[in-house]
Amino acid sequence: MLAFVAGALFCGGVSLSGMTQPGKVVGFLDVTGDFDPSLALVMVSAIAVYATALAVSRRLRAPLLGSAFPSPASTEIDGRLVAGAAVFGVGWGLAGFCPGPAIASLAAGAHTALLFTPSMLAGMALFQLVDRRMGREDETRNRAAT
Amino acid sequence: MSHFTPWSALGGGALIGLACALLLLVHGKVAGISGICAGFLRFDRGDFAWRAWFLAGMVVTAVVLARVMPGAYVNSVPRSTGVLIAAGLLVGVGTRLGNGCTSGHGLCGTSRLSKRSIVATVVFMLLGMASATVAARWLVHA
Image 1 (cartoon, rainbow over the protein chains, first blue to last red):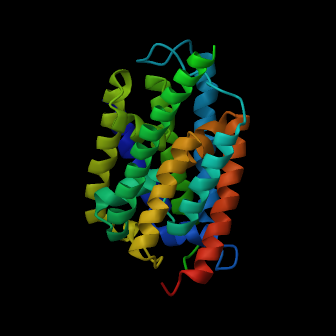
Image 2 (image 1 turned 45 degrees about the vertical axis):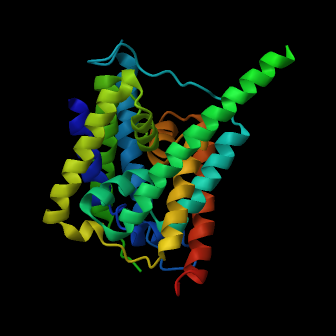
Image 3 (image 1 turned 90 degrees about the vertical axis):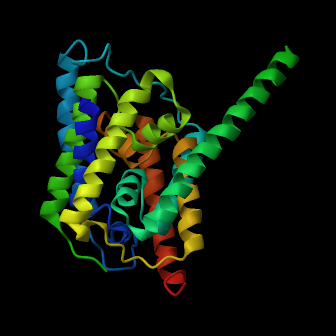
């Protein structure tokens, strides 16, 4: 239930910060246009607050309602990470939407998000489907090889 | 194209940080929006409830804010239907392949100085700059 409050705060944050206005995002990313540094301040401010929370979490044994704090799963920098970030970056720069603001803009009824956000969700679902299937094929191939 | 808005940027950023802090300190979860969406689409049993609540909180707030401050959702970037759909697919596939987006890697990962997240953030920032710059030249008249 507190996750609802977190979602509300998050949405308020992306909406107030200007990240739901693709013009401001593209204004930050486009190096030849009128530079709008707002997005950098959004990141600095968010990181300052979250880093404080991380410092607090290190002094706690467990989250208030959960069993354990998340442990970083992987530290390996692989091709998937770099390729995925690159593909995401290209899409982000093209339309000026990243996932959080895309969800908020869709719910707010922004016309461009009506096209962008369902495509984004379809991309996620499609990737998971293909990835799972390929993972299964790899498994059977490995099993056959051994 | 757009004006520098330092105070709303700082305030909005603080709210985003606070939202992620709440999820971490209360539920012990990392607030990666792409991960939340993807997990929601998979119907993962153990994590479905908090993800659904989080998304519900976002949707309800956006519906209210669209009435209170409609200016927050103005899109001044001219993009054709095809480009919007292609960009959506790229963001969807890319965030799953790279396991995170602006919130998961850019905010949560970078804050705990994760090497993976810092690399991902630098890569999507650079490619975002490249594609936004190219798009501003070539897609303006689309």
